[in-house]
Amino acid sequence: MATAKVAALPLLVLLAAAMSLPPASSLAVTSTYVRPRPRATLSVLHGGDGQTPQQVHISAVGSDRMRVTWITDDDAPATVEYGTVSGQYPFSAAGSTTTYSYLLYHSGKIHDAVIGPLEPSTTYYYCCSNSTSRELSFRTPPASLPVKFVVVGDLGQTGWTESTLRHIADDDYDMLLLPGDLSYADFYQPRWDTYGRLVEPLASARPWMVTEGNHEVERIPLLHPQPFTAYNARWRMPHDAGASPSGSNLYYSFDVAGGAVHVIMLGSYTGYAAGTAQHRWLQADLAGINRGKTAFVVALVHAPWYNSNTAHRGEGDAMRAAMEELLYGTRVDAVFAGHVHAYERFARVYGSREDPCGPVHVTVGDGGNREGLAKRYVDPQPATSAFREASFGHGRLEVVNATHARWTWHRNDDDEAVVADQVWITSLASIPACNKKDSFTL
Ligand SMILES: [Fe+2]
Image (cartoon, rainbow, N blue to C red; front, side, top):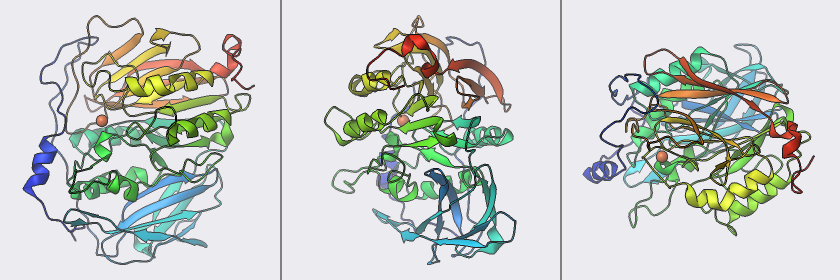
C-alpha cells in the first residue's frame, strides 16, 4: 500500500528546518481582512496495489498531444490507452519508465507516455498501465480563443492547499500554470508522493504546466550534489517540443489556443545572465514570436521581479536586470511570479517605473504551503503596486479575445473563492503607441 521506500533521516528533518521561514509578525497593509490560522500538512495515502497507477498528471506537448505521467510501486507497463468514450480505448501509446534515488529513498516506477494527435476542446478517457479499473479523463485545451488559465504558485500540501484546489476545481478552466514550489518535500522524498496524490484529481484532468522554485532544487552538498532530481524525474515538461525547444526542463515555452497565447516558463534557479543557455534560448524564443498573430505573451518566474513584501526582497533583481529588457522588447503582456506567500499586482512597469508598454507583474505565491503567509509589506505602498494582500488564493487569466484578458484573484481564506482583485489587461500588440520598437514584429 505504501508507495515510498523510505528511510527517514534525522538529517532530513534538520535540513527541512533550515529552509527559509516566513516573517513572524504581521502588519495590516491594504486589507483589514482577518485571516484564519494555518492548517496542517496533509498526507494522502495510496489505496491500490503495487501496479495501480497513482500520482497521475498531464502536460501539453505541442498543439495536439499530451504527456501522461504516473507512478507505480512495482513494475508495470508504461502504456496509456485512451479514447473519447468512457470504457472504450481504441488508441494506445507506449512510453518509458524511470526511477531515481535520493539518499536512502528509492522512488517508485515513474512512467510517462505522450499521446495524440488529440482533438481540441475534447474530453478523453484514459487508463495507465492497463489499469482499466482506474479510468481517468481530461479535456484538451481549445484551438482558439477564449482560453482560461489558472495561475497559482507555492502550492504545498496543507489544509489550505486542499482549500485552494477545491476552489480551482469549482470553476472550469483549460490549463493550470504554476510558477514554482510544488510539493514542499524539502528533501523528504515521500512528500513528493503525497503531493502527487493530493493534486491528481485536478492534474490528471487538465494540463498542469509548471516551472521550478527554490523548493525544487533539493541539492545537498557532497550527499546529493545533483539539483532538481525529483522535480525533473516527476514533472517533465515539454522542453523538447514546440517551435523553440529549450533543451532544459528548467525553462521552456509553448503556444496555446492556436498560437493566440504564448507562455514562457523561465527558470529562476538556473543560469539566466547574458551568455547563459537560458538567456540565449529566451532571445531566440522571443525573436520567433509574431505579435501580429500572438495576441498575448505571458511569462512565469519564481522569484518576483517586483515585490513590495518584506519577504524575499531583491531576490529577483539579478534576473530582472538580465531579462527585463528582452521581455519589454517583445511587449510581453504579463509576468506571473510566486515565492512570496502573498498576493500583489503591479501596474505596467519597466525599469522600476510605470510604463504603458511594460508587463503587468503579479505575485501569486499564495497556494497554501506549510510555511504560511508573508504578512509584512513595505510601507508606504510603492506607487507601482496596485493591490496587495497576504491571503491564500489563486489567480485566473481568461484571454477573452485578441485584445482583452481578464485577470482575477480569488482569495480563499474564508473557504469561499472570493474575488478580491480583478483587472482587464489589454494586449500590448493591440496598442499602437507600444508598437514602435524595431524589435517588435508585427
Ligand atoms: Fe519559493
